[in-house]
Amino acid sequence: MTTDLSKLYEDITPTKQRGKEEKFRPARTSKFWLWIADWVFHGMLEKRFSAFRYKGVENYKNRDENYPTILFAPHNNWWDGIVGYNICSRICHKEIRIMIEELNRFPVIRRGGGYSVNKKSALTAMESLKYSVRVLKDKKSHLYLFPQGVISPPNHRPIEFQTGLSYIAQNGVKEYGKINLVPVAVNYFFMRDNRPEVWVEFGENISLTDADIDRKEYSQYLAGVLEKLCDKQIKEISNAEFDGYQTLFEQKLAWYRQFEQHLKKIKGKKK
Image (cartoon, rainbow, N blue to C red):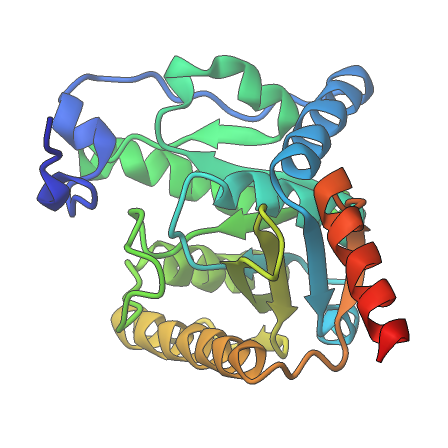
């Protein structure tokens, strides 16, 4: 059996491919359901990854907390949403608000902060964008976006944004006076373990106070900022430059890795 690799990454979004009308569903969180979401999404990540490391959190903390914050990140695989949830809940200590294109297939995700977006038509997609502007006023949550609009191949360049982020930011400024835009580089690396690690870097906060922007040009600018941050992260990690990284969690070595480390110690003593 062979796989048609050209179909792994489609420019056409899932709701357009399926061609079905889907009802808009807003986020519906509560303390109970957020407890459930924490248990599920924290556990999923820790089961599949050996460690989660992050740096640049001071860039996030330096934002003006009196105004809404949007975190924006690349979208390269299925785990990105789970990583975003963990970033918001465990590092930022905020609820997440995140667009889920096929939320109607998994409506329970609304309880964790997801809300739907249907890209089948511009009219239905606009409903989600307007909702995104409204949820910015909720200070207990952050909006976490994937401005590329579709899942792209890992480390695909150039990073290209659709104009949704610029629309939300522009109208957020009109509504609230200022918006914090924090780029977040996310990558996955195998680091001498049988399971990969999650590596996250927060870029410098961008304060938008002027609503008089060209959305297309501003989208290109933000895409360039994120691409530069992601490239910097990859280069540093490739050169074993790990300064500044903190560890959110790190799994114990499997028994055979512990045995390997023990043998190395014995070998070193004999020398």
